[in-house]
Image (cartoon, rainbow, N blue to C red):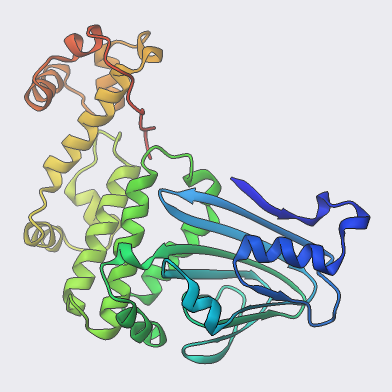
Length: 327
């Protein structure tokens, strides 16, 4: 976590509107105005890196207006899409879709590389996640076409819930070894939402399938070390039938069972390479990663890596990042 702005740390002599405005403009990347000609009595902005995606949380007490002009938008070198969840206070948004009052708990989607304005009247807390448009595999024109229509997409509620949780738990998630997988799943969900809104690229059915597969991967990563993890449990957790789950996986050329084994083997392999695990037996490491049969674990490990778990541990390989169980 990086603190970008904290007015509580400023000396009284530094609490001038010009100073606070400059700090906020540098942190947020937009023009800052104070409607009452007085800066917020408190501003706090912090940020996390979530596998290459930036999550910020901004809290302001007092009137504030953020504006990005057409000239500033044209100067952007990297188009970005921002998803903001409003935790406290209502905000007025002017953007592609016109003017909108966003209530507490509401989600706003903003093409940061186009003109926009946000206004807070009093106390406000906002969490946002920025996705580079280049990672979506969609053109800027398609993104702008989709934004006014996303609330009519059948995926809107699901993606909103995902973004709400990711931005809320950013501090914890940023330290997870599998955070890059989480970022990839977030990009997949975002792409599916936008594509379904305009019918670009994948059909709505394709987008739904891609969304479910992202949920499958996310669920499996969280329960990877549970020995009884199976297709029935995954299907029940995602409220789909086992037959539907297998059909989706088959269409995507994705073997659920093999992927679970591969992920478990990679976790065990990383732990065996960690000098801190030397006090645990190979069988204990295998059990920790969901393998109840030590012989089966050793056989699959050798098939995957061309060496036995014992040989791998004794060879003293360079330590790999060790995923935490449940990540």
